[in-house]
Length: 108
Length: 115
Image (cartoon, rainbow over all chains, first blue to last red; front, side, top):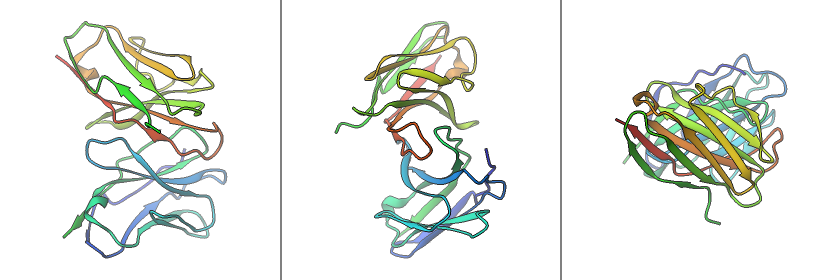
């Protein structure tokens, strides 16, 4: 499975866009990029996933570079409830390996 | 839908005792996962089942750990005997499909403390 590099922590002002980067330069061609988040003391929550194309859902947008070596998760209008640890996970299937993630703090 | 249900939510036991954690996946899901989370090691996949069959248990730390899924609506993770280093939050997750892209739904976790 591909290794990932994410900044350990980030701050974002409430109402602004939060852009969370992830480097996955060793990703293989058949690995999707998944994003999950974990709010304190809760189980992880699925956000979005993609393979090559950019994706958008009601929670976030996912931008994947053309060479697929990195991606960015965008929360368009961050709220206090978006404070969480965000995990970027390249995966071929059911086996998810969570790294250390990025701890996002949304500031009022 | 009630989501993934785990019990107990908290468990405190003494070293050497047997511990059984329980999980009820979301109805209709055919894959089930057990994870363990600690500060030191983060979130680790222990084992996963597809259609009630264990597919990969390479994450199970040692023989003291065992997991079963007797039917599609129930799974257990057992630790016998328990040790203080087993203290962690154990999450169960389920998904539908067993294929390449599956959204895993996580339960609230069981916080285990072994004294």
